[in-house]
Length: 184
Ligand code: SF4
Ligand code: SF4
Image (cartoon, rainbow, N blue to C red; front, side):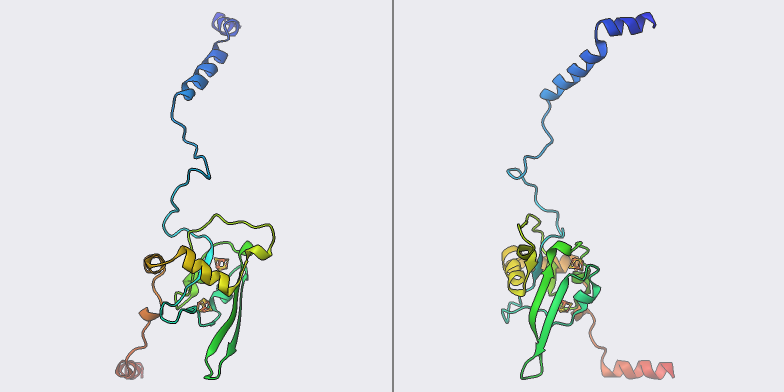
């Protein structure tokens, strides 16, 4: 053992250094957030609880029951049940999401041609049973009213989830013919 090492051992130099470091930290501002009293605003476009978009004109869901979202969902946690009304229009009887199985990939949002399903930025939810986290159509519409009210939902869709169905307009008949002629 060298003289330097001996002196360090006798006077507990390393321990004193450690204590000095601890003491210094008593006087530096804390970086820990005291959740839930201190909260940070959710990052724009973050993926939280699901919601079904409510059509402001009809007051009903915008969803037409095409099933694309369910087909794309890697967790197979979207269940859609439809029927036909007297005018032979498809009616969405049930639209349900098993939130506990969701992996928040947002493929459902991306796949939907009508911008009818979204992931809200609400992430603070829990439950004591599976049923509490099984979201039915009414509960999903309620999520829209609660977390995406007013212009928030529309801005969210415009900003993060374009293009939508209106971006894929059917070409004019003349355009079709011209293309056909070109091909022959
Ligand atoms: S976010 Fe992904 S896993 Fe969750 S419901 Fe949508 S497609 Fe399914
Ligand atoms: S893709 Fe959109 S319109 Fe089609 S069933 Fe899903 S939410 Fe409804």
